[in-house]
Image 1 (cartoon, one colour):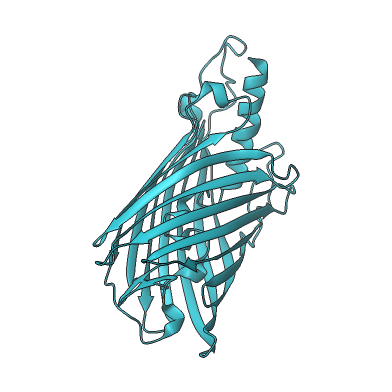
Image 2 (cartoon, rainbow, N blue to C red):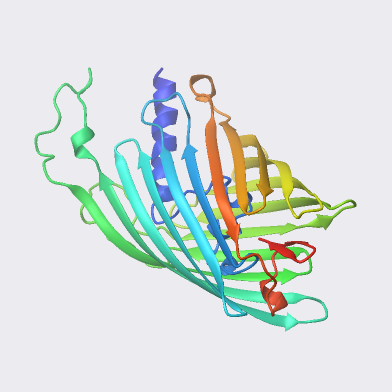
Length: 328
């Protein structure tokens, strides 16, 4: 039991540090919503796209992390896009709420070879709070520390920047999140003040016969402050019909970069789009000693793709194009 509690503590602390100033990245970006990863995707694809995501981690373990988030982005004129993200996160006795405002501008590098460059910027406001009202006594701690009386909370602001390169069906996104150091004088202990998070997201869409596609991708994130890093290896199969609707199935495999190819999280995903409505479900199981004590991580995404029409600039065409419709 002590081993289980140790794993839970380590994973909870890691998740808390990793999430602060960021929307927690599991598989939400694979729900046809690359905007989760980078502001550079704002305005690419449908004119107006909305995604709402609910995530429950380690279902079956008391006080396991839960997250709800909303993402929306819209194309502005021919070569720009704007977006907003908002989230609410609960992780044990920590509470976080955040909002992110994003802007992207898209450039044509070469018409003939379909090379495009997008630059993005986000401004983030995050509230991080320890819910001392939820502290409970235990057998080992029969009395809550009476010195803990004030509200352990702090509000911080930060910036993200990114660049996205596309050529035909290939894309490469490089991002730096949390450029500024945060204020942490409210807390004591080993909490890092630098939460700089570097990310790489890349993939290719292979067009098949009969309106089908296969899309492998990779997502890497690295936390500069303590050297933590992980990699997702993903694959999706997408099938369109004659009415520009589609369904897809896929899988995601995450490992820590100091333990290459030793699985940390693994699981399947499914989704579909019917007219303007979008739905997807993702399941992941964490491969460690907690496996026997929870039923995995579940994520549901619903959304709407509105104002689906062609842009006058090919630099804002989405990855998935069937007929006169565009998809992110």
